[in-house]
Structures are given as C-alpha cells and as structure tokens.
Length: 291
Image (cartoon, rainbow, N blue to C red; front, side, top):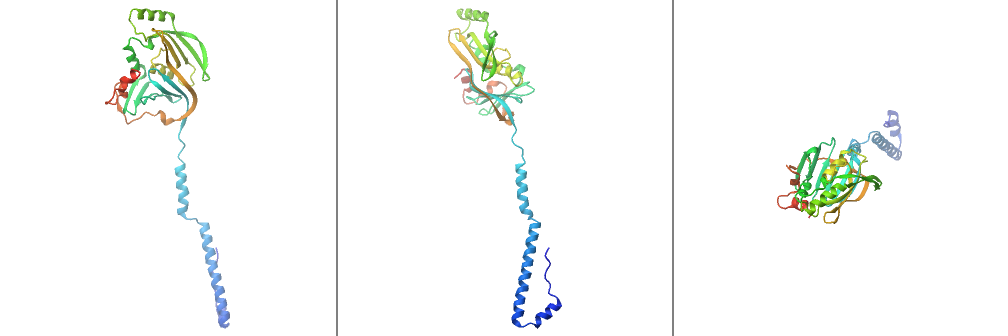
C-alpha cells in the first residue's frame, strides 16, 4: 500500500518564499510524484484482487469439462454372413449381446439377467419384446413352410479346432439323421434344399455369459448344442453345398455402453416380423425368403 504525499505547513511556507521559476519546477515534481503513487497503488490493487468476471470464465469451462468421459465396454466383435439374414454384426460383452442385421436395420438385444429378447428396427419404428424361453425366430418359422429347418438336425461332437485365436468345437449331423433325410427326400416328404449332412463349428468358451451362445443359436435357427456359432455348412438333399453361416472377421474392441440401451420411442409390435414391416412394402417376406 502506497501512502499519499502530503505537503505540510512548513513546506508551503518554503514554497511561497521561492521565486516563480522554482515554485513552478517544484509543483511539477510534486504532481509527478502524486500521479506515480496513484498509478502504482491501482496496479497493486488489481494484482491483489483479480476481476471476478475473468475468474468466472475458467470456472465455467471447468464445469463443462468436468463431465465424465463416455463409458465404454470391452466387446468381442464378429462380422458374419448368414444365408437367412445376410450380413450381421454381432457384439458380445459383459453387459449383453447385440446383433445388427444390416440389410434391414434390425437390432436384437439380450441383456442381463438374460430373461428377455428385444428386437427393434429404427426404419419401421417398431420394437418386439418377448421372454427368452418363448422366443422363436420368425425366419425359422418361414423355413418350416418348406418342410425343413436346421433346428431339427441331430448333431454329435466331431473334434476341436481354432480360428481367430478362439478355441472352437466341431459338431456334425449323425449318420442316422442323414439316412432319415434321404428317405424323406426320395418319398418327396422334404424339399431338395433340406439338409442331409451338416457341420457346425462354434465356441463354448466365450468370455461372457453362456446364455449368449444360446441366443445366437436361436437367432440363426440352429440346433441347440451350447455353442456360439462361427461356421455352419451343410450338404442338401440335392447334393448342393451350402455355406449357411460364415464369420469373416472376429476381433476385440470397445463400444459405448449406450449402444446396448433399449430405445423407448418405438411402437410395440406383437410379433418379431412386424419389426421389419413399414406398411408400404414387403420387407419381412423378402428377408424371410432370402431376397
């Protein structure tokens, strides 16, 4: 703190006794000293008490930046192609499983405690929810119309293998199943596209909940052997080789946890196939027919 300069009574007497030129010079000196003192005192006050408005800006910015980062979860991603669905992206995580059918924008979710299947489509604006034990793929139903479904194939263990650094197990259809299918085809009791011999390769050592494997078996309408499906091929009754399921890529990555959230702004559907219908097209039938 700087003290103001005060001219005492004796100084005033001295000044009056001086000649005009000296008084003029002395007055200039006193003015300069007073001005300097005021300026220095103002600067000191400014340094001691910063402007409150300038302090508010960093504080406000800090509040905005204090929002935590978007939560992400580790996932095992698989890019697959299914003869029934087309291209599918599947994501396995400890907060659930998510499958995206890219052709129609259909999304299927299975979330803890793994008691419900949720299927929805943003293009149609519809969502279908059903208990897991009652869920049946509508595409599997459509295959039944042609007198066959892969769900009915009887399988038995056929060894182990690896792919994408994943330990995998192999299952194949039983010899008895092949004989029954061949006899049905001869009697025209099943179509030529029905499976005669099927190979199923999948994983039973998922890093996440085992129910996720059962979910994918249901979605792909496959036999229930407790494997997450990776490759499925079969020979038809007409001796045509069919690649039913192919996994093109499998890798670990992360996704925002919000990607597994269930939308709340969609219309409730009574059946799964309704999620594929827009009301002005035949998407559901076209997809079920493999078009």
